[in-house]
Amino acid sequence: MTTQENDDQTLMEQTNIEQASDISGQKGGIKQYISFNVGKELYAVEITTVREIKGWIPATSLPNSPDYMRGVINMRGVIVPVFDLRTRFSRGHTEPGKSHVVIIVKLDERTIGILVDAVSDILTIPQEDILSVPDKDVNPEYAFMEGLVSVEDKMVAIIKPRMLFDMNSIPDLGVAAA
Image (cartoon, rainbow, N blue to C red; front, top):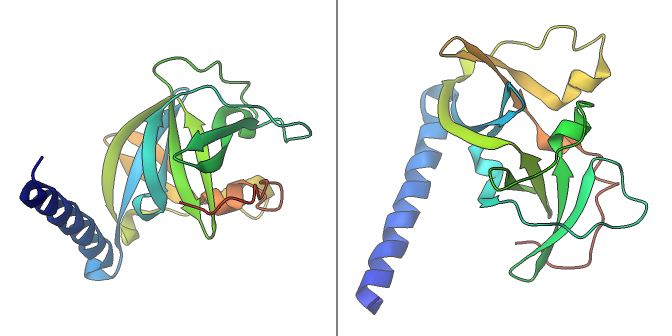
C-alpha cells in the first residue's frame, strides 16, 4: 500500500468515527450500540466504549480470580482481562468455540474483554425509545442495565459494563491501556 493509500485509509477511518460521534450527539439523545447474544438473549453496549471485536482465543487463567473471569489475553502488548458474561449473569459457564467473540471495551483507564456468543448488529436508538428497567429498586443486580429497547419484536437489554464488573476486582496488570 502506498503512502497516499495509507493516508486515504486513515482519513476514511477518522471520518467514520466522526460520523458515528455526530450521530450520537444529534437530536439530544440518539446513541449507537453494538448488540450481541448470550444464549437466546440480546444485550447491547454503547459503541463509544467498544475498541475492538475479536474471535475467541484461549485466555490464561489467573489464581484467585472471580468465577466469571476467564483469564487474560495479550493484545499487542496490552494484557486484557476477559470476563464470561454468561457466568456473570449466573447462566452457566461458556464453553467457547470458533463462533464466540470477545468484545474489547475501554472503561476509564482499564481495558477489558467480554466473552459473548456472537455479535448481532449495530443499533441506532433514540434516547426516548429506551425504557426503564423494571424492579431496578428491588433487584440491585439490575443496576448494570441502562435500559431496555424493543428492536424488531425482540427485547434488547442495554448494559453498562462499568457497573457489571467490580472495577476493584479487575487486576491492574501494570501495563498501559490501549
